[in-house]
Length: 455
Image (tube, rainbow, N blue to C red; front, side, top):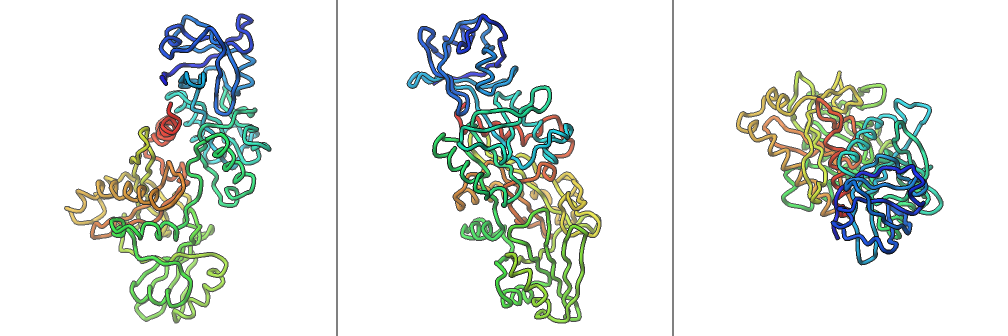
């Protein structure tokens, strides 16, 4: 099977029959495509018997408006092409479907909310590398896996029928949406019936991640002591061992609901809780009273209790590091970016959604105050930690991931720690500084789709 890259352009002329396409003669010879009898055209789940007619331009594929409409293709799309002689199929692709939570055509500047710029970057990355992308919400899923509507870019965002994709990038932001019957049925059906690749198919929770990585001896060094908070004895043990601990909702995000517990000099305990309104402070005369105040939350939501760390600070503000890792065009984990995130205001979490700011790793480490020898190697050690952790997740958790946001921290001695792993990393939080037209993360997602589909 051979492949190359071509541009797909609509041929709006009566010279082509509805089921004819025109390819350059050199490309036909290169791919060994027969012209004397019909073959099958495949674009995602769309299949149609066609006849190939030789043309002049080797990098152009001309297609009738009728075939373009039925296949869901848009003019000027750039795709890769391969021909399989065994099943006489000419395949164009890859077709990438990005599953998102919202589409608002009444807001043309931000039709997809906070990820609108990312969606445009995916369109540009596909034009650059050769792929076809559309975006769809759970409401756009039809009664069978081949029945979909998608939003595509054609001098503006337009919704219309599309074939089921070769690759699905699951960007649903909530577990409720992800676990809905229609979404679960769709993912199961396209995988089993159409062979669609789905990556980042599920959320990760904190207990699952720490339990999975804790079984690997070489990864333990990155893990703060951590347990599922199920009883008072666990709280008592951790508060006796450490002057500060954190309670984190197992299924939380954006730093919501994190509780910091500090043991005071007079034997009392203080809690700081993050909320949408800011930080809420409470004091307790004993640990039993503190636990009693938490019992309602613990019954309602699962919490992970984690060792407090003496982390580096910038201008008296907490700082951590978001490493973004992707599967690359060879199917291997690779580092895409690392940025430092500095907590905003009086927050002790660094999420940008809570007023945090970005800094380069170099600047953050330069001002961190860690030992000079540790400072020289910290960046490389963070990169190694991120890649080791990604490989550990892949080995221990039976789900398909192509992109992970890995939150790391550096303590005052220069040691690297894992804080959290996010399978739906925000496209704002992990943005490198000086964002260009197409971020490397969008490029990596398209390259990995090429790898998965053999284009």
